[in-house]
Length: 258
Image 1 (cartoon, helix red, strand yellow):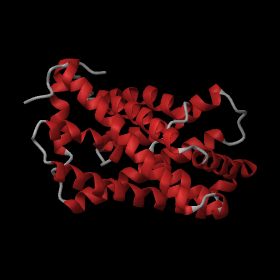
Image 2 (cartoon, rainbow, N blue to C red; image 1 turned 30 degrees about the vertical axis):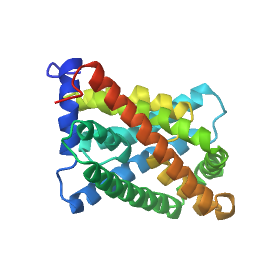
Image 3 (cartoon, rainbow, N blue to C red; image 1 turned 135 degrees about the vertical axis):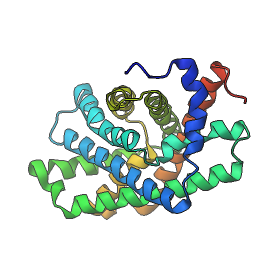
């Protein structure tokens, strides 16, 4: 990180301001930035599938896939788009009474829907491009295997996995927020994101591309009901995980109250 990067204390003091700034754009701008973020995470999801294609199962493959996926969050952090999972830390200005519960729920809803649109668009373009046929069809096979794995989890697995995924994502966002350089933001993202992907945790926005790709390849194997159930339960877990990170770090650095 660069010389002007925030210390732990000053970062904790400023993250709530950074989160509050996420709510300032008008709804139209939030929709555009949310769709952009959904698309950017979708690109990361494509990177994940390509890394998975034709590779032998194992820890090394999972870690490589996680590094490939981390490109999505790098794009979000550097370009300043609106990502629902990062925005779960809006609980921080909310508990500080700087943002109402209604405003928080409105912003979460707008950004979640926008992320979904962006993710689906990337999924549709990816399938239409024929890129799933790459590596002798191994990309398509990886997409279908991913869909089967995600839809095979029960509700408690999805919730717990969503909590863990967004704890790591929000730790990455927290660290990247403190960096003033592109290199610092990239370095902050790689480790936590590679870890959550390698462990197979559930990230709702990533699933907004991964599951539609699998559905487009074989709708019978990816029913819409379980697909939506995955997204909703992963979302609930993501909210808990992001909230835990924001409140714990702010309280620990004594910046929870204003």
